[in-house]
Structures are given as C-alpha cells and as structure tokens.
Image (cartoon, rainbow, N blue to C red):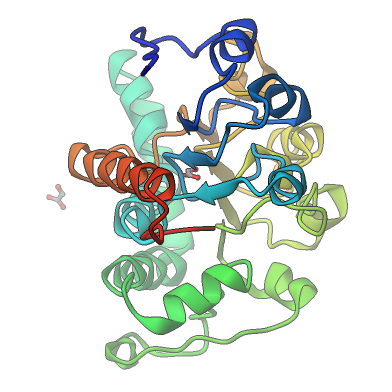
Amino acid sequence: KVDLWQSDDIIPRETLISKIKAKDGLLCLLTDKIDKEVLDSAGDRLQAVSTISVGVDHINRSECTMRGIKIGYTPEVLTAATAEFAVGLLLSTSRRIVEGTHAAKRSNSVFTACVLVLLVDDKTTDRVGTILILRIANFSHSYFFKYLCVQFIFFFNNNNFPFLKLKQWFVFVTSFPDLLRESDFIISCCSFNQSTDGVFDKEAFKQMKNSAIFVNIARGGVVNQDDLYDALSRNVIRGAGLDVTTPEPLPTDHPLFTLDNCVVTPHIGSASEKTRTEMTMLAVENLICALENRAMPAQY
Ligand code: GLV
Ligand code: GLV
C-alpha cells in the first residue's frame, strides 16, 4: 500500500511517524528529519529511504547502516541549476538587484547615485568577478567543479590578472584562512557535517575583505547566523546571499530580513522545473530498485 502525503505543506512529524509503520520504503524531502525515532516506528520492513535531495544530513545514516536500510539521493542532476542559482545570488547581492528593486519602488534616487559610486570604486571585482563566476556556472559539469565542491568552496582570486587573461581559468585550492582573506566572493557549497558546522563565524567574517560577498547555497548550519548578522550590520563584509538558513523557513521577523545588504531566498537552489522533475524521477527509481533488490542508480 502506498501512502501519499498530498499537501504542499511539510508532512507533520507525527503523521510521518505513524504512516511509516510497516512500510517497505520511504520517499522523502530534506525537510523530513529521518532520525532514530522515525526508523524505530518504521520497524523491520523498511528497506530503503530515498530522498529527493543531494544532501543527506537530515537522515541518520549510521542508524540506517545498522539496520541495513539503503539510502538513495539525487546527485548530479541538480548541480547546474544550483550553481546557476548561486550566480543569481551573487549578482543580486554584488549588483544590489533586490535592494535596487526596493529603491525603485520608493523612487529613491539617492540609491542610484550610491550604486554608481560602488561600481567606480570596485571596478575590478565587479567586472572580473562577475564574469568568472558566470564561467564557473558554465563549468558545472567539469571535474574540478566537483572537486572544489568537495573541497568546500570555490576559490578564485582575480585581482592579479588582467581582464583579457580570463579566457583561461585560474583556480587555486588553498587553505581556509587564505581563502577567507583573499576572496572577493565566497560561495559555500559544502555538505553539512561536524567539520563544517558553524565554520562561518565571527572569526571567519573578520578575516574576509570588507568588500567580500558571502553566498550560502549549502546548509544554514555552516553559518553562525548571529555572527553573520553582526558582520553585515557593521559592514565587516559587504553583503550576503543566503538560500539556506537556520531554521527554514526563516521567521519573518528575523533580524537578517531587516538588512539591505542581505538577500534571503527560501532554499530554492535546485528549484527549476526540469531539475526538480529529474530529481523526483531519480529518487523514485532509487526506491523502486531498492525494493526490487536491484542496484540503485544513486545510492549514498
Ligand atoms: C538541496 O539542498 C539538496 O540537498 O538537494
Ligand atoms: C546605461 O544604461 C547607460 O546608458 O550607460
């Protein structure tokens, strides 16, 4: 028997716990916390948990392993869409698009003047950085994109290279402190685990350039949000674009929403129609394969 949660709302935890009883498989989202209690409720029948996400930090992996429950996930199919979204956040913040929209609504001509000053002051970063990051998006299928994802963050330092040289790629893998000190744009696209929990904290923001733009498309937990608020409100860094927060959704009265230099989106990095369809198809295939005792196309 297939039980389907039909609503657009996140399935309430109690419902999940009661519905999962004696099921063979579970198709879930990253908003569903699959912990020991849920697995206990499922009982011995459960063979597979298939999540429609690339991240698996919402699933208790060691409990699954102990019980012989397979985990399916959706890597690759969302990489390009999510990279694109990171570029979107980068442009929205560095080019102040969201802020500009608000200014336009208020017919704020002072804002327009300010933007001009910003562009003149920071020509290199603006032009070169933007093109570089667009190229990163174009390269989303390349080996080193994946490598750098695993390695935590893209790092590029464009300051020393004249514009024309950008036809080639300059990518440096470096230490975290050097990365913080030297980057104009820092994009967090790591997985969330013990070693990345809260790494973007007061100390990290202090090491960044005052002109730095921080983008997070990973998990809210990699950031100490109080420290980020502090850094943004005191201009320790210039701006932030966050597709992920703690918690999600972020309460509407959260202080981050009061900042002009912070763009927040509701975890929609992979949310293109095509990508979400591909993710869903892959997750369903993962589940069916597991239940039929065949290899999952994408087992975690
Ligand atoms: C998105 O955050 C995902 O893990 O799929
Ligand atoms: C911009 O719109 C320009 O005309 O320079």
